[in-house]
Image (cartoon, rainbow, N blue to C red; front, side, top):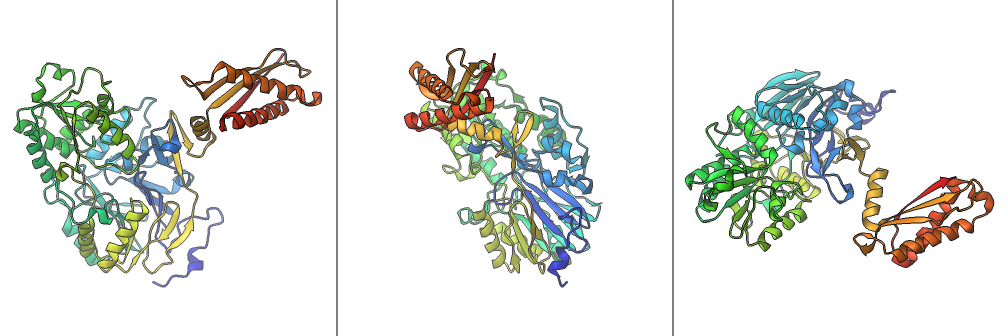
Length: 573
């Protein structure tokens, strides 16, 4: 097909980013150039389809907030044109944002039974009421139509049950959205990757693959481990330790939990569970057949009377989450349960980029208390990645033979490595995706066809706030420079009726408050600033606030080298 760029960029007078009839668009709102917050849009004939809607973890820029989501304002303004949301699997970085964003999207959500169960459990535990999400359960492999999109989901192996790729066909051709996947010949539970269906896509002709890049870089050469390897390694390790042995892993990894159960049974240990999200997953996995209903799981309270050498602990906190069970156990603040010297904790996971420091903090806390720590660096088979290594990417492209690859779900290093692998297998073209950039998916097309504003929202209590909003800026400034609040009691003529009162936070050494001398200096600087003002200006609150603020900024900068957040409270009598 010959493309006319001017024709493709012809805009509707009411919507400059309406998907045209003569193109098939891809627009990532999150998950391209980063790990997590996956949110992808496909557009044609004026309609949009969303694939996944996930979270990522908080960072230094998001003080006081643990969760970030992609800014979905672009699609919420066009929700009448959104035909649905398809979930590839149940990990938080693919479905975790639904509870926050669905009220603004109002579209049906298509999920497998296991993913649907995880989503319903999340919504039911929400503190302030759950949105009535329209969840439509579909089998792992299913075919259906949504507007101009014909969908076919294909079973793959991953680190969670019921993962699937999504083949999307329009009148322009077929693309494959991989989601998260790997090639595991022994996944323990669930189907193998459907190689025949993927080869069939290649035989029919595949325009593009929009693909997972997480483990494409050179540091992850070869092929990923199998879940069978992990099970055998856990059985071996459980036999090497005489005290309590614990494992922390992603709470959604039902297969890994099943392997821990088998390792515990092999050595006569009872399985003890710590972490609310693990309990929820266990209930769902037993209902959907991914964990045996005969398996017995004990609470930490039930474990009080057990000998230490008869306990196999499974706990949340593999990514350093501050409120998770392992973080609290590492500092002996978990209720009703304590870790002891000579216990052992296995990290059956890898560090998600950005989480290295809090994870290291937990490991150091454990080691300082005489608790053994075992990671994949010590024993490579204690964890199996759920993402494709270079050899697996090569196999996928040999099966599907796409004409173009769009690497997503990874940082730029991973995306470029993914593109290099695709090139070596004969793929004609690769386009590195970036959040907010609209890509035409036809290999003969112009590539980038537009850009929109995008970003992240902080889940701040009951509210969603932009990362760069004033509230977040104030928190960062308070954290770095402290804060000052000054109260001025004045009459209507602008006279001070009493000495200014100053409160300082984060500017002293006395439990975070300033010493009396500094407080007095601030109060006197505020008095001088008012007294030096023209009388005609003292009657204006805004003028007084501005003058006192400037005076205090100069004083604190000279004396402390800080730029605190300053608030002036004026009371007129």
